[in-house]
Image (cartoon, rainbow, N blue to C red):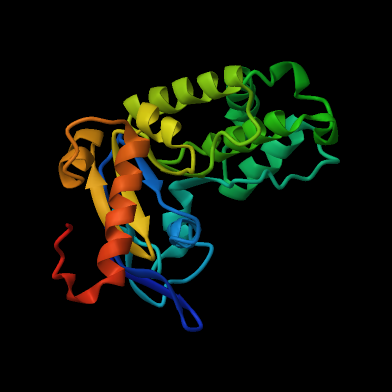
Length: 255
């Protein structure tokens, strides 16, 4: 459902994303992790159609987002790391605004919106102004809006920021339920325990390059680690990659 080929983005002299090749199959949850400044946010914004790559291809399903951005974006639900909302609207009014943007049919809007709000434990607040919502409630409202138009792909940047433990458990369950129904998730996060618990496969990016990808067991193999959680494997892989890049004559060998 998501495929990139030679995806590249520069900011002046900084190479933020360097010839990135990704493949995310339908109905899977793909985690995207890396150190600060590795290129995660730039990649997320290119996949969501918020910024243009310098070179390379992004396929959303079978649609090239650069050639047909409107059709591609119609298939995407985007959940940013910060919930930017019109706070003088009620929760239900915000969902109506979102529905109109995506052409959701008027006849089925209210039932669909209330069902989604109920899933995210917001139904009792549907007629309250968003300015009265807590940060976690605002984050859940953004998630509700992102799935309202029934997208095939949901792109998420730091999904659990501001959520309490009950909210995190609820969102993880809903994401898995949606993935099992055929939705495809691309999730960028710094919370490695979330990635380990939720994601089917994980890609690690460092200095704009994808340095490892696969299941946790695949990553352990690539890290030559027989045991350990995702945090241990992540630290080993990123340290070794940094070492290789800092010692050009090492010929790729790790002492």
